[in-house]
Length: 203
Ligand SMILES: O=P(O)(O)OC[C@H]1O[C@H](OP(=O)(O)OP(=O)(O)O)[C@H](O)[C@@H]1O
Image 1 (cartoon, rainbow, N blue to C red):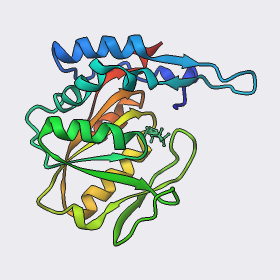
Image 2: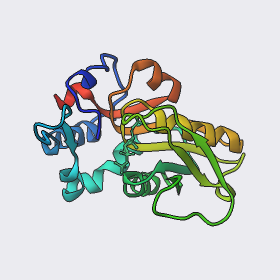
Image 3: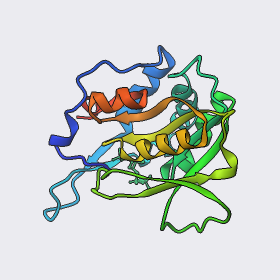
Image 4: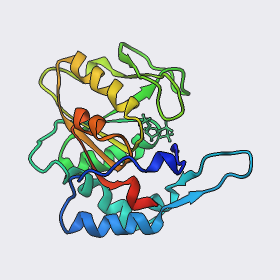
C-alpha cells in the first residue's frame, strides 16, 4: 500500500468513531508498529509496512474485538472482507462480532471460483485499477446484515464495489470497519465507515 505519498495522507480532518479504552490502547500499539518505507529512488511513493501488526500477539488478539467494537449495536450476521489481507483480518472481526465470514475475491486472482459468484466493478482504486470484486452468491442473501472489513481504505473503491455486491444480494449493509482510513470524508460517510486510525495518526 497504499498511496502513501505525503499528498495522499492528509485527507482526514474529520472526527472518526473510536472504540473507547481498549480501542485507544490498541490504536497506540498499531501506530508504534507501523512504518512508512521508502522503496528507493525509482519510486515517488512511500509504502506502508503493516507486517508488525500481525507479528504482535497483542494486536492479533485485540484487533478483531476493536474493529467489531466500532459497531457495538450492529449485530452483523456476516463479515465480508477482500483478499488478500481481508482473509486474515475478516475472520478475526467475525469471531469477535459473533458473525460468519465471507471472503471477497478479485477476478483474475490466483483462486479460481467454482459456482455462481456475485460480482461488481470498482472505480479506480488507490493503484488506478478497475477490479471486479465478488463473493459466493449462495452465501449472502436478504436475511443478512453485513459488516464490511478492511485493513486500509484509501479511495474506498474496493469497499464501494462490495457495497454494490451486498445491495445486489438483498442483504443490509450495517457499515464498514477499517484499521486505517485515509479516504475523503464523503466516501467515509457513504460507506458508513469507522476506523481505528486516520492518515494523520501515521504521519
Ligand atoms: O481504498 P482502495 O483504493 O480500494 O484501496 C484499499 C484496498 O487496497 C488494499 O488491498 P490490495 O488490493 O493492495 O490487496 P492486499 O490486501 O493484498 O494488500 C487494501 O488492503 C484495501 O483492500
